[in-house]
Image 1 (spheres, rainbow, N blue to C red):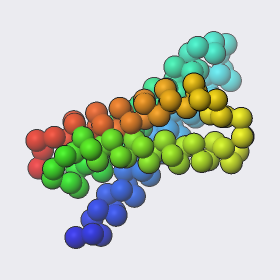
Image 2: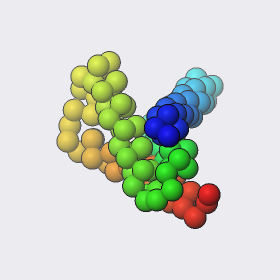
Image 3: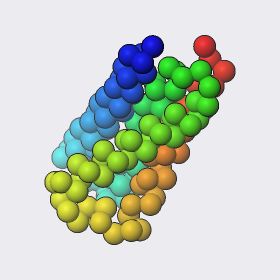
Image 4: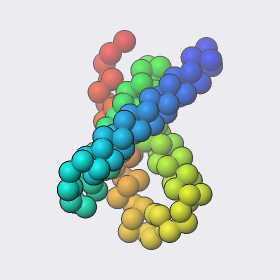
Amino acid sequence: MKKNYVLAWGKGIFFAYLLSAVFVFLLSFLMYRYDVSDGLVRGGILTAYVLSCFLGGAIVSRAYPARRFLWGFLTGMVYFVILWIVSMAGNRTVFSGFPGIIPTMVLCVLGGMLGGMFQAGKE
């Protein structure tokens, strides 16, 4: 039974980051091809966070019959922690300011929680 949980977590996080990669690729293409404002890029990145965590939370919470919002919440938190660690390894100034960390974390957690809630009541 534990194998299904580990597989669900692996699939959820993998597909969340795969969706993030697709969004980043699309944003980079838009930036290359068109004159895109910084606000649109920031909005696209935040949208990528929310939708990726939503997908990850929906996938992970499908394996758990109860408290799916909690599993979606935890998926969003795991996504954020991995994002933060990779960002700190690549560029130590990214997310270093406290005001930059909190909104990103909240968006990731809420996106994952919404994904978990989306699976509520489904078998």
